[in-house]
Image (cartoon, rainbow, N blue to C red):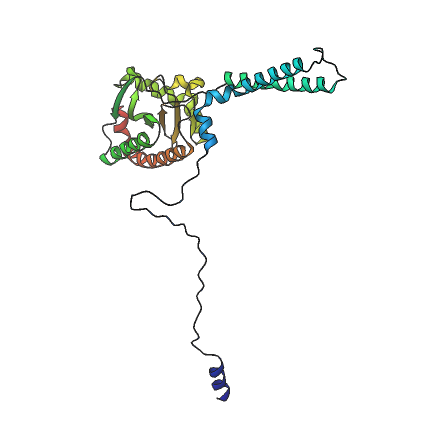
Length: 290
């Protein structure tokens, strides 16, 4: 008993606890009565801004520097009274030769900068006509999902054409299409069958992954996609499981970013799961309507 009383008197049972709060860095930002922002502002790259606004001057600047240096060396050689013939034993002649070499190098560098310019990439208005063809016997929920996929891609990416083919049937053709294919018909069915047997589809089906043709004009397989506008710049071939493919056409070279490609992959997986249930449920009806 005495030991217990002694412990209570020395160490209080309900001792106050100290709370430690981590140090936090805070940034103060306020707005003055006039409505102007008084917080920290991002730094501006003045040099980068000036170079981007004066691209032609910057590219020709080495030519001016090299030309002025060349004239300065020749003027100095003339007024200094040194013989015009270079003498290897003279330190002045060796310095002049080195300066002349640097001046010529600057001039050649400027000529290269002027002749080689990055090609500007801009969006191209698709040729052909706008079309909206949806397989009629699909349930309303599936049609809504197909239209949702089109709206999502056309609003946030450079997508201007979308063709969904499943089990050998064109389920959806929306956006811009070549004039001869804007109203559908037998040529579309024949070319769909040609695509399903071609190298583009076989490559995608074999790998099971997305294929991105960043510059369609450089690929010989462009002939397998005649239903797209002739000036389609980029195409993504997204497999829909083992039975289908989604052809996404864009209006800009290398216009689909990595985020767009990942988004299209997820949309393809969702469409595959939805179409697989519908097509497997009524395969005979779908084949008759094609």
